[in-house]
Length: 272
Image (cartoon, rainbow, N blue to C red; front, side, top):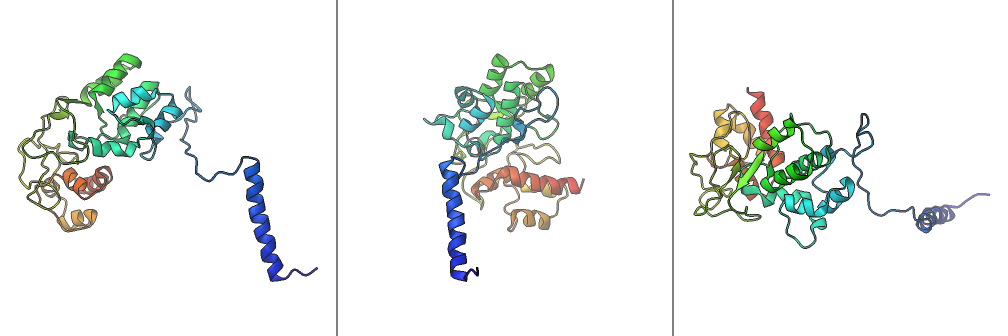
């Protein structure tokens, strides 16, 4: 029997939608992708989720469900005050704590969950910071090794006032938020130069040499030997005022500082 093009089209449509309807009837058709974390494949934690795979697109509710961390502990550790804590996305943390002078975002959640649940976590990479509330909670509820306790002692942000979530702090106000054992810094937000910074170098901004962080300016990159053309290629535009904090500039441009930091650090490493 010869099938005409018309009947072939009808047959294809019938098979396609018929299969979908059949799957729906069996409860096997999903319209949304499911999030699945990487698991440890060996050792005593084999089969358990790896907190290093937590992503910024996850919500606090998903983290709580996947790792069994009480949602109220997550809310307390990261100062989430919204009525529906479970619906808050992890990627909002970086904007909430932009004035801390250090990176505090999804990586901080990874560290907190790993310590809270006693799961393996590599501490040899980038410096990851936690709020004092998170560190105190871990010391109360988690079983921490001497190495982990020492890490918390040098990677806890102590604060005297709440960080500003969405607006740059006025020049007339000082944010007394700094990592334990490091100088306190005054944010350079405000008007005066393109990109949201004041354009005036802050004597208290003393970044670690050859390490891009929250206190690094564009001038620091130039001083470390990075070519202006390479910086402009990385940021996608002409070099702003050299005295601007890169983190302030990225925030004003609506860019992810964590992503930009990695690109600029690669440039610094290339000229060491």
